[in-house]
Image 1 (cartoon, rainbow, N blue to C red):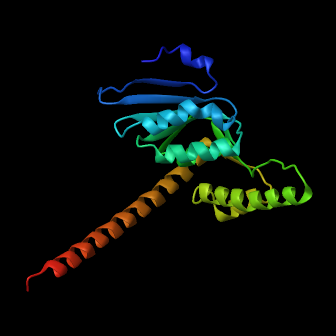
Image 2: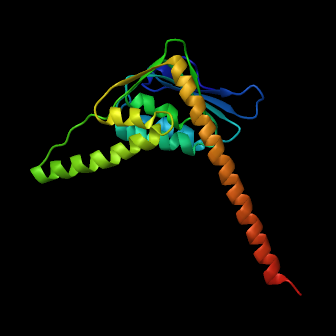
Length: 215
């Protein structure tokens, strides 16, 4: 088990300990700073890839935002993680920091914690046509990423407002109301997926029986 004092010399410390049943590990990942460059999250990504279904990952989040490339990478890793991933919003979850919890399995929101959601900011450099190509690509790609990330959590009107340049602040109570709505949609989608899988299995079984029937 890691010494609890040592990890905090790192920008994004990860602490691990056995869970109460002794069958797995509890990983606690602290993101209490700006979301830095992708290479700074090598340890976090490794933990997420190696975690099993018997483990638990908790992300303690208080961040003003940061690199969108790192955010996309982390969200992919959180979704792919075999262990349940929970987010504890302990203060501010702003900009890219507001996106990360959307990739989790559950959240806890501390009293007076909040989200600030806005459109990406950035820049491009190079020859004129290169700048135009990059800006055009980012406008399409990152706006699609934003819409898919906040689908259901935000209304269509709110998404349109944010993409037009507005800032949206959401308090702790409202975060939980929106999160519960998102969970219901996820559960409905999972139930529909199970029905489709069952129907496909039945059809496959019928086809096999028909093919191998002696009659």
